[in-house]
Image (cartoon, rainbow, N blue to C red; front, side, top):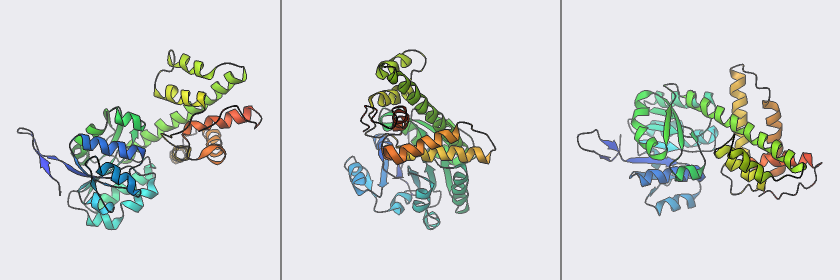
Length: 313
């Protein structure tokens, strides 16, 4: 592998040169954590300003995905599996250095994870599924949760970098699709939480009660934590920018859950209802607002499609 290494005492050499592709809110924060941990990070994104921002913090700017891949260890946080296919192409895999490992942080379908792992193995390379649980502020604070699965040697090789980016890495074994199934399941639960908050807060509001006080109540008793707290406050205030995760991406992940359930012949009774609500949010509320904006679908319907009194955004 074409890397710069350092050693600590009599311990093994640790690769210090890595690549990172995809510098949205999450990717930029994760690449910054690697920089803070002392790694030489070559960064690439379709948005050049994102590359320049990290270059000012010490990253090596890449002109294309090839530059990040050439480091021998690529971490990517791309929007979906089609974006991964466009960046980590068969041609680029064949040109990658010996021992190359791709760590894919995107939430994708189990089938795509198997596809990418097989393509990497065919070229003699490693592949690790490593979707994450947490928003950009969790990355910055060192509270990111990472789920990992893939060939054991590849997972061991990238373990120090994952540790640098997250609070805890959960090992889901040798099969590349396993971690993405776990992540899809997490997001399916969050989708339910968003709709539950939307319905409960709307019910309160229609009875003249204070939604923000209700969120304070549940976080002080039965539902403490970032989902019911952070998203609850956003819904109560009708504040959905800046987005930590957009409604468009939320719909994408919901469809991944429904697809995985169909493949496994698992009935999800609430799935079609949630799909209809998320599709309405994307089309009628804002595809690029935070996915908590799905609450406005319930609010508007409760108000008879009249102004609910909130101003999303």
